[in-house]
Image 1 (cartoon, rainbow, N blue to C red):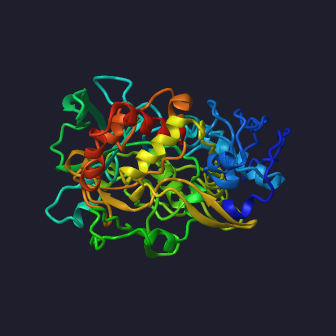
Image 2: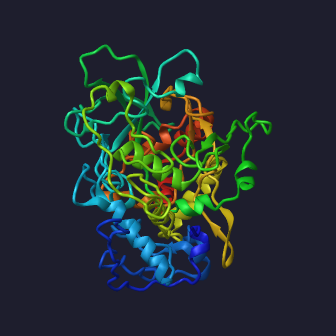
Length: 490
């Protein structure tokens, strides 16, 4: 399978025609390609000078100029017919609902037996992030709850919960109960800027209500919001050495920043490698991240995760086989999502283009960029990397180091994840962050969506980022607004 950076060869986009694939009733192939392509990338709406055009291209040659609702859903520009076919069939699998087996829709069956959603798009609306707090009494389905056994040993704490496995799945097929419900309440937290202006942060208090009358063993749990998906294939192309050069686990330079890589298990290669995806960098590559989401969120098995996500305790309640019926005649793979389809979904996500920055030459945005540097935000949110493509070197600007950082007790979840402690989180990329409101209709940020806007996201920073957060509170209001204008331009 081509990597995304190997796939794009010339920078132009054109509308796709109707493509049709034959489907065998006995051994179904990939589903039909959607009849309409992604909207064509419009020319930059601002009359950008050449240097501004370069600054606006966050994804390098894989940048698209669209600031509308479909900004996250463009493919990396490539006129190749095979590239388009792979992308749009992957998109179809990403968007469509899965159903329980057995079903006449054999290319879409295998849902469950327990699950969080019926489609990938249910949690990543328009390839972005969903609003996690639509209800005051019950947390929205877009919030994922990771579970672990609660022991006195941090390594053992990474083991799945004995009753409910590695995550809370609130839905189930008939004859098997959903695992429980996540509920939340708010605790106001007051603060004051140096200039006297006050602010209020809202701390979420989460509670898991397990759906069983039995006494359930105690669990560690971590609440996660689904992030936007743009540029993941580009992050995958960053050389490991370029990430490691920003690592300073012992803070030898004395700047208070001690990022370190997570070391995780690569299922395909059966070895420990550097993690770079997920809120705690607990996945090594896009394909394993995708397969893990199918397994945990939808209950769909793959060659990487071939066993249903159900514990022996739950299996004792199960009265029938819920497996899907999609065979892979070429290699004998009887996973509910065969490798050829897993590769299509992976290809789709790897090839989601990055939207261009906006207002890069605006005075307040440029002032905000200087404030960003003044606060030393780039110590973790590393602005740019050089990557290699089939066209040669390219520069991308994701604003992340892909490393783990201690973010302090306020943001801690208390749940280890490989080498990540209960206070450590991976630095999330910032590209596209200013378009969340346009694409998804809200401005919820951080791992559990507690920040109601970008200002609150900054104010919640602690631990290694505490000095930068405190410096932010000492800025003038104009400087604070300029920083937010810069972030909104990304």
